[in-house]
Length: 381
Image (cartoon, rainbow, N blue to C red; front, top):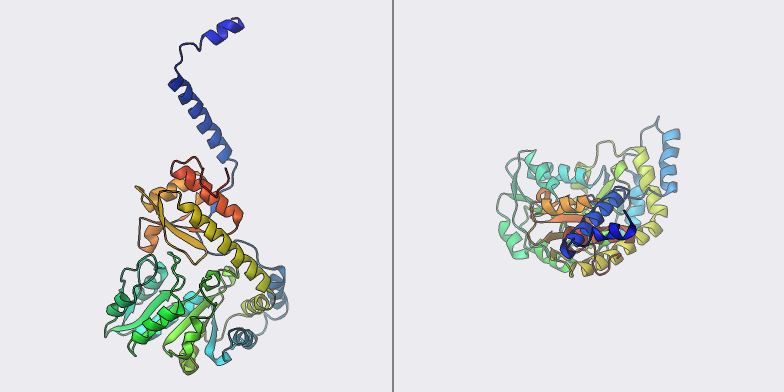
C-alpha cells in the first residue's frame, strides 16, 4: 500500500466518528496518567505533616529515661504553660487523653440516670454515639449550614436535658458561632444544663480572637471548653487534649481527669509543642485560611452548594448527585473525601483544606467530576 492509498482509507470517516475516536484516545491517556498519580486522602481532618523533630525527640527522651516512673498526675508543667497562654488559672484546666475522652466522661457524668443530650445535626457522629452507647437519650435538632439557630436550640432543651454539645467551628459544616451569639445561647440555658463546646478546630477560624469563646467560662460556670492536639498541632497519635472550665468548676474538672493523669510521653510532647510549635501553627493556619478562601471562591463557578467554612475543610453538595456519588466521582480522580451520610446529611461531602497543592488537586478533581474537564477558575489548567 502506497502512502496515498493509506490516507484514502480515512476519506469515508465522518467528523463525528473521528472526534469520538479522539475522545476515546484522550480518555485512555487520562486513565493511564491517573494510574501514576498517588491518591490524595482529604477525607480526614488531622494535619498530614510529621510533627516537629523536637516534639518527637522530647517524647523519645521520656521513653528512654522515665518509663520506669509514674508521670506527674497533674501534668503541672503543661497546665502552667496553657494557663499562661490562655490567661487563666491552672486550676481551670484539666489534661486528658484527647477531647473525645473528655466528651465521653462529661456526657456520662452529667446525663446518666435519665438525662438527655442535645446534639445539633449535622455534626460529629461521635457525640451522639457516646451518649447512646451509655443508654442516654439523644435529641438531634436540625442545624442550618451557617450555624445553629439559637431559638431552635433553646426550644430543644427540656426539663430532662442535661448536656448541650456544640462543635465550634462545626464539623462537618465549618460554621462558626461568634462569642456574642454563643453568650446569648448560654444565657438562655436553664441551670440544669451544661454546654460542652468542642473547639478542636478553633485555630483555623479568622472571625475573632482564638480564645473569644473560651473566655465565656468566666461568666458561665456551666460551660466546658474542650481543645485537642490532634488537628492543627498534628499530634493525633498521642491522644492529647484539655478541658477548660470556670473557676468554680474545679470539682467537675477533677472528676473528668484521668485517675493517674496522662502518660509521660504525651505530657512531654504536649509541653514541647507548646514551647516550640507556634511558628508551625501559624504557618498551617495561614495556609488553610488562604486556600480555604481560594477554594470557596472557585466553587462559585461550579454547580455546587458549599457552606461558608471557618475550619480546615469544606462542606459541599453537587446538583443532581448524592454525597456518595460525588465521593465516587472524586475517587476516580484519585481524591478521597468523606461522605456526608456519616454526619447526618447524605447530600454532602466533606473535603479537607491543607496547602496549595492539595487545594489544586481538589479543584481539578471537582472539575472532572462535574463535567468541566478540570477547568475550574483558580485551579491548575
